[in-house]
Image (cartoon, rainbow, N blue to C red; front, side, top):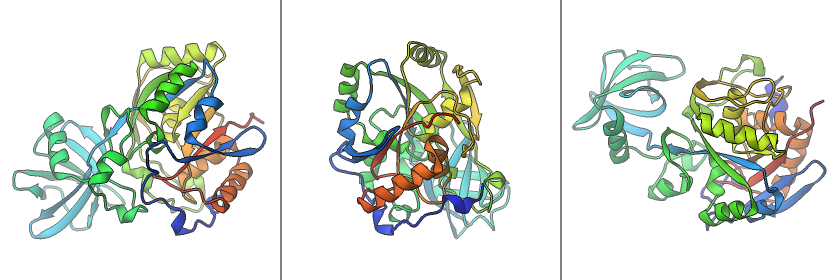
Length: 345
């Protein structure tokens, strides 16, 4: 499809600079099988049914943005995919002058060696520490990797809490699964009381999710891969809920992409521990997910393409037009929408 098909005008002032306060007080547009309704996130419990299963992404965002020096020259890197306990693919600025063998120092006793160069500013770094020691260094010297459309990507101390879900557990993401930012312990307890099952999967979201689509046709766009894990126990619980007639409700596009990657053509979910670069556009036959909770996405983005595939392009264009006219807040810190999947044609 033409990328222009997914374009729309988005006033800059509709992109949220900070999340709704308190957490969980955001608005939510319900795009039902017929019609739309302006609600709040607190109304979610009443829209779900006992026996439904909500699938959350429990990845934890790490402070993945580092500022350092190669000699006297400044270098900024954003980690986006771990390749070994001590090595990450990163996006570097500027990357042009970096060469394999170069040393980049981020602190007097913390640095990395350039191992190889890729395309579009990507390089592979091998750090001088690994595993938990590397994560500790990132916590000390790194900054949260806000998307570039939010305060030009400049995070502060508030973002260390704001840009993390309350159920974050598995460290490794460099972007938050932002639909999950709306949840609070009280809302999770209300879902439990409603009889909604909760299951966690893990997709370590990479910085590639921020990259613009620069091609004219979606078939030419290459998605960066991300590491995902669905345990056998999680797969069994989701399959059992589906077999009992419950709906599978993905909290966020990251959870949906992982579920689609790990399910077979018959809609059966399997254990999964691998990389996925699945790119979902209109025409995709969804295997498992019935309902999607997500935020409002940017024009021409792969995420708007995904929701258009899930609910129909015309329907999502109408929903976004309504959201803009009604003052909904867009993007990672913005409001939510709840989408019920279009019936297959």
